[in-house]
Amino acid sequence: MTAGDFDGDGRTDVGVLYGYGRQDDGTNRTGLWKFSSTGTGFNAPVMSWDSAAGFGSWNWFSSDLA
Image (cartoon, rainbow, N blue to C red; front, side, top):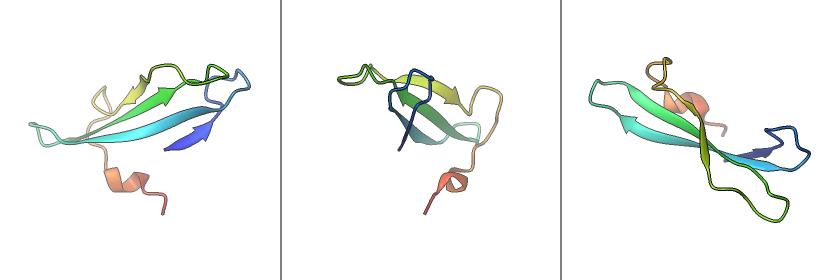
């Protein structure tokens, strides 16, 4: 999970990288979900990026920040 102004509206949004695990074709699928700030809360999550959409297999451990 990370926070930042992802849509340029001056409010802090939340992004979550989610690992779907190994798929039937052997690739690893990962999705980025964005929770946009409403100013008093957050909108429902929207998938902003999906490794299955032309990126192929995503190495989950490449995303490890610690």
